[in-house]
Each structure stands twice: as C-alpha cells, then as structure tokens.
Length: 261
Image 1 (cartoon, rainbow, N blue to C red):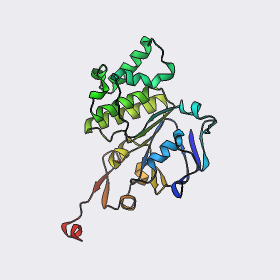
Image 2: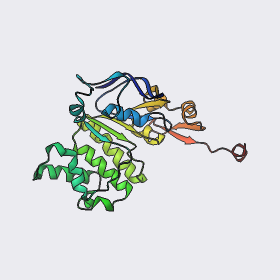
Image 3: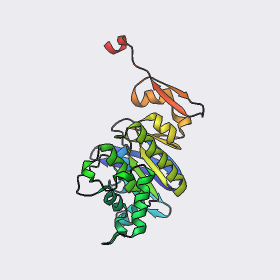
C-alpha cells in the first residue's frame, strides 16, 4: 500500500500541495483529476522524490521516502512523466530496454530481449521495434515510453497524462493494457488524466485536486456529478450512466446569448 500522510509542498510563497492524505491499494487504477495548475503533476513528482516536501510522509509498505533512501525508493517505480521528447539516436527496442537499465550489460540476454518485444507486441507496436525513435510521431513516442515503464517491472506505476498525444484507438489500447497489467501484476497505479469519460471508464478511484488540496477520493460513480464538474471547471455538464452503471459526462455548450454576455 502506498500511503501519503499530511503532505505539504511549497515553492517560496506558493503552496503546491496542502495537507494531502490518501492510501492507494495494490491492484487498483487511481486517476488524479483537476483543473490546470492545481498540483496534479506536482503530486506525482513529489511521490517520485523529484520535489522536496515541506512536511508530511510518503510510505510504501515499510519504506518511507527520504533523501537517504531516494535511490532505492525509485527502483520500485515505473514513472512516465509528462512531455518527454525522444531526441536520441536509438531504436524503439533499445529505448524499451532502458527500462531495465540496472540489469543491462554489453550483451543483452535473449530473455530480456524477448520480454521487451513481448511488451511491444501486447500494445500493437512490435513492427516499430527497429525504427529510429526520432522518426516516430508524438503518439508513438508516448506508447514507447509506456512500454519502457512496464519493462521496469515496477511495483508502483505512475503516468502523467499518458494518452494526451494518442488517437482514440491507442488511448483505449494503452488504458486497457494498463488495467490488465495492474490487475495481473498487482501494481499500485496512479495517473493523471484530463478526459473525464476515460477516467470514469478505467479508474477504480478518483483523486480530485483543487488548488493543491485533495477535496475528494472515491469511485467515479460516487464522485462524478454535475456539481463537482462545475466547481472544478466552471462548465455546465450532464452526468449520465451507461448500461453498466458507468458515468459519462456530456458538457453543454453555452447558448449564443450566453456567449455574448
């Protein structure tokens, strides 16, 4: 279990995270939602140890994040930050293999190579294995970095807007595989999404952030309401449910008269 206790993060006079506490169980997909600039990426970076906390504690099992334990702490993570550019002279398979950098040597074992190819095959990109990553689209790069995160064999999987550059097909390819691997490998998974409907379909739990505070934690069925959406994004929306009881959001376009006001 990944547990955050009364986390506070500050940059000068700016409060980035205020008194945040939550617990994430293994085998569940957790999605952070909230408007731009509310601290979603900051929270991921803090959990990874890239941003220093002002106070509070981050614990995974019996381990507590500290400056002294940072190296060992990060070995547990498959972390995919936002907006990484692959401007390197490497092939796709080489980038995926970097997920196991700690185990690489001058000679790559057949088993490790097969594992990397298997991950690419599972997300439908094995045909790109020998392509130079500099020739890929932004969406393809995003999928390759997802494969690299899986290659790390993490205990905690964190992804910051992993589908932002993907078309509709690959959004669902990535998220379906993410859910499958989270359940099968018992990952503790946390990611940032902006698409409320994708969050509703794929999340076990939502973490709702507003101005650096965690204002709600629970299932999409519990939390996604018209009132919450208006509070967070200042838009009018209807929240309906499909035949499986999964909520979906339909925003309402303002009338011509409202736009002119």
